[in-house]
Length: 375
Image (cartoon, rainbow, N blue to C red; front, side, top):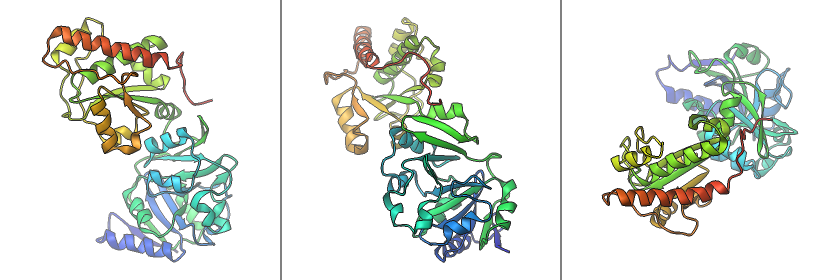
């Protein structure tokens, strides 16, 4: 019988953490809590881990009790094992993880650091569609994964499946919580190039996955109360007109539009001049609330347009990894001047300049209807 530790009843969570780490390092299987149920782990560097995880019912593809995956401590860790991830896989891993989604992709042979694993581990969670990867959101599981000396092979399942799974495997320690966040398994998604397919339904719906796979446009100025809100609102309306849909339906066509400021406070309204000016154009800015540019926000954006060269340079200096996403709103490298305090005529001129640049951006988009990723 495995040793069981109830996290809600233990007086020393650190002791439970060290127990899990020590068992895994010794080559044992450890069952940890997961927001969808349980997560059975063994280190990939031990030659017996895969066969012990298989049990009597589990093929390498993970179609028995539970779902096979390689378990990651951080979304970026997938780059160590998936050397040629598609842009869609990278996007979904950044937006879905940590969380209840298993992503399958890449080649159907071991790549990256997994080539150094024992042969039995190299095939774990592998099918013709590539390997399955998972980055759990449970904080205890994350801490274990960050602390062990090697990546972990994983078997995921619902709480109802745990007894059956444990009966068929030699598990050293079970660490559990009274309940799971979700009453459904993680969604298993196969990513092939620019397309996604749900292999196993779960917590995250097909519709939500299509939304997460969409294109996110971010417009950036200084305070996020004038230029970037006008660009956001105008682009949203122009894009909806192009798609012949309502603005609130853009997300279902695969598009999200937002704005932020390099020196913005959170929750400030748009300037009254901008609100009144766009109201005459049939665009409502009255509900705008400013937000600052953050690393997390940029990670979720595909296209970032700045109003000036100084805005662009500041972003690239602070977040050099966004060099492929950030560019000037003007294709001719012209700044969009701040109209704040300059009167109605300057606001109108600013709006017209912004609209002109947006028309060029829109002209480069091939949009004609719902561009979801499901087959």
